Image (tube, rainbow, N blue to C red; front, side, top):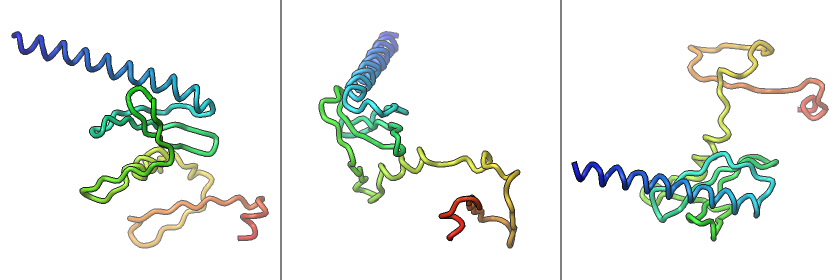
Length: 134
């Protein structure tokens, strides 16, 4: 019983600390990058870093920071050394992914070849002079 109470108290303290960290990060980012809208803040499982996904006018960006946002890493590419995989690139792909089922297929010309396993969507505007050139 005592272990359960200690675990419960530790869980609440950790959740409160994480929330306080998130608020501090939001406050510092708002002051330093006013045109950025925070999409998410996630604590990474290593190095005490937080991943901050923001939306800016030129698209989504990923920043990394410590719990108090005293240091902000912009333009960093975090790579997992064991696999060589870029965690930053994977996260940016998640943020920019488009739901296939929400594409406006009622306005589309569609063609099917083979079994239809692979799909591609190409968007073009016939009234756009650059699209017309291509």
